Amino acid sequence: MATIWDDLTLFLTVWGTLCVYSYTFKDNPFWKWGTNTLVGGYIAYSAISNIDYMAKNVINPMMTKVNWVHVAAILVGFLWYFRFWKKYYYLYRYALAISVGSGIGITLAKSVSSNIIKQVASTMLPLYGTGTLRGDFDNIVIVVSVLSVMTYFIFTIAHEGPVGKPIGWISKVGRWVLVITFGIDFGNVIAARMSLFIGTVKTLMLPQHQTLFAIIGTVIMIYLVGTELAKRRKVAPEITAP
Amino acid sequence: MAESIWTKMSKIDARWLFLFLWIVVLAPFIVSISLPMKISALTNQWYNYLNDMPDGSVVLWSWDVSFAGWSEMEASGVAVTKLLRKLMEERDFRIIMIGHRSECGPLPEIVLKDLGMHPDQTAEYGKKYCHLGYMAGGSVAMINFAKDIRSVMPVDWWGTPLDDLPVMDGINTIQDIDLCIYIESGGTAAITQWVIPYGTKLMLCSVQGNVPGQMPNLQAGLIKGMLGGLRGGAELEKLTGFLGVGNINITAFSSAHLVIMAFIVLANITFFIRRARREI
Image 1 (tube, rainbow over the protein chains, first blue to last red):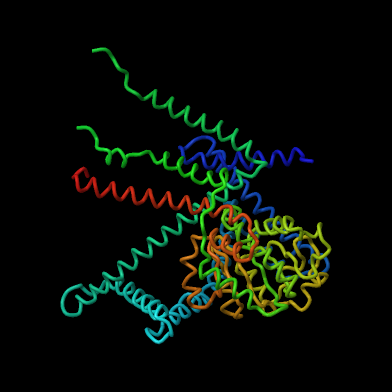
Image 2: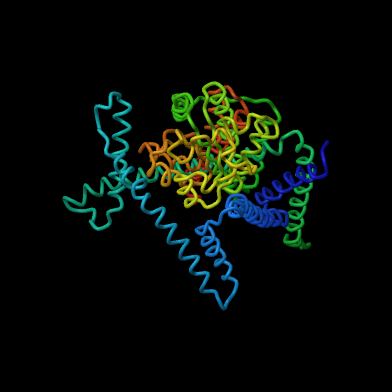
């Protein structure tokens, strides 16, 4: 049997979703409520999740055996809270420095391999002899695109004279490649946003949500259209007889 | 001078387009419409790689998807879990689920519950599959997880010690994992922390927006396969026969894109006609 909490969950799901999407009409109080609640709720949820992780995986095991590395890490973690204490604010910087420093150290060393060496190696491709015409064509496209885009970013040589002119032509190809890439990226962003929207609409169209969707959607729509019409009437110039 | 129809079209309030999109997206959920879908080479490659893994493989099913991203990635998340369950039952695969975001404790739990795999629903939990829950700490935790799983995750999501779960027997480091499937909605550190130092085999389920960014990694062999967004999920559903949310959503997805393409073409026609008529 559905409890009052189940009903409240259903209501909040539909209400919150429609409040956020009401922004597509205009900035309004429903949208403000939706986004502020989302941000506040998410931060609270993240805090609780992390505390829960710490309790289960760090604090509880220490009840039987103290791990001094974990104790030191927890103490450094507490330094973050000195940000709110003007007198000892500098202590917060130690926590920040350790976080940033270790983060960069951890990521940078391996990024060179994954983001540079492996990527460069995968561009050293045979331009013919892959076995298929399509394979040859793909490799040519990759190599030409990489070289032309890199040429586009050479700004130290003027595009004139016997050396500069060919560089200018290659640079133009690079510009085309970049523009096509941006187009593909833009298309993907649209696809991503539509996927999110469709997933949300699917949730709203679940049998248990449909009635609420219709009621809340109508109420919000009436409010938004009503206020818009009222605003237009207010700013419309008065017509006076000649 | 009266405005031409082209000028009027260029001034259409964007909200009419939003309303039109709402109608187009809602329509397939109200009226049963189905548009054809071809399975892409990318999805085939992903599926074949998983299928070619030897019997008894250990798969780390890593979750790094936000609540917002879940509406896009639900199809992939559910279809991959169903496929892994099938491989677990038929080919003795072992599945270890883990979350890299705070949302990825409860999200896999919801999926397990829907599929009847929750510990409250079956005694099979822990024998061939388990859910370790949310692992806080990002890249730092991933490094330690790779060296010693129990040092960062001594218990599973429900507080059971890993040593009490038969599925975790002999699995101590990332090198005991044969394949990692990573579902993400905002990039992955698995390449830098697991693939580069340990040579872990990695397959992705990425949000659509990240697909172009991950393609060079696929080309470089750092990832073995990639399912792209809602479409990838829907294709996997079709390929495996586990039809679900992806195949319901994909018609709305296709029709919405047709409408957007029509808008873009119309806007460009309007622009060029107005320019030819010297209206701009």
